[in-house]
Length: 315
Image 1 (tube, rainbow, N blue to C red):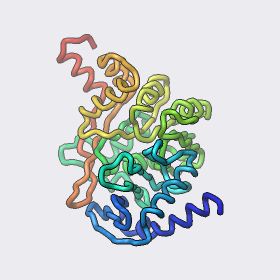
Image 2: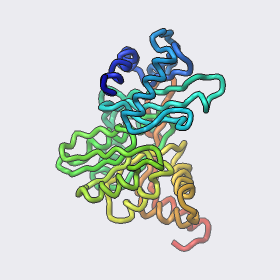
Image 3: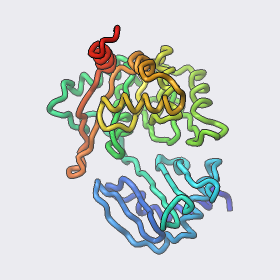
Image 4: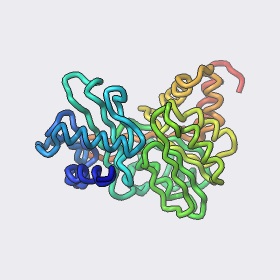
């Protein structure tokens, strides 16, 4: 039996959870027990079909299908299920205490949101139309928020404001970006730094594919410096996401990502950020109502220049 058929034969046991109405995430902390995040609330299901042998088979075949390995020497897997937007994270028992396996499967919304599906904070000095104009004017935008706040959903909503005739190229390690433009290329790279095709290779390829907009997915230590370089070398209209709790700590998170990759003075990094990023949009999720809200939008250049002035530095 081919790897694809074997994977599909195991996936059928997950199907009822993957297609469950309102499902955001499947969490398996132990065999035969499924914890489901459904509309922001957790529900527990017992399922004898998902025993340890079947779970290990699923992760092993999934890893192989992505050119990865999952065993005692390769104890973490971050990937997506082929031909889907389901994002999978798995940990080997060697990295766990009192568990045989850990599997999380993030389930994207079945449909893309519109910008108006995100509430605007009462304190926000932007209208929906003004936010849309930031995209149309090709400002470089970062979407900041915590886990599960809807950062990728907002990114996809903003992409609806891009001219459908524009040529777009995406570089991402999980197939999450959804866009209606026909003239587009999506490049998938490995999450492992020692892989044969990393963000460095993907971005190098992307710049040669005539992009009018070149977008990275989520920023982390592996791609933040590349994102800043792109934005500082004439690539406009980028939209990416980053984990941070507010717009100010977003700048610190970007700086830390760069410093973990390369030892560069923090002030120099801030200069780089100011010239590369135009706006940071902060998003939050109300766990009670399951509503997502845009709570802040920061003009990065104004903020960093003001910070320099307050510290007595030349602008």
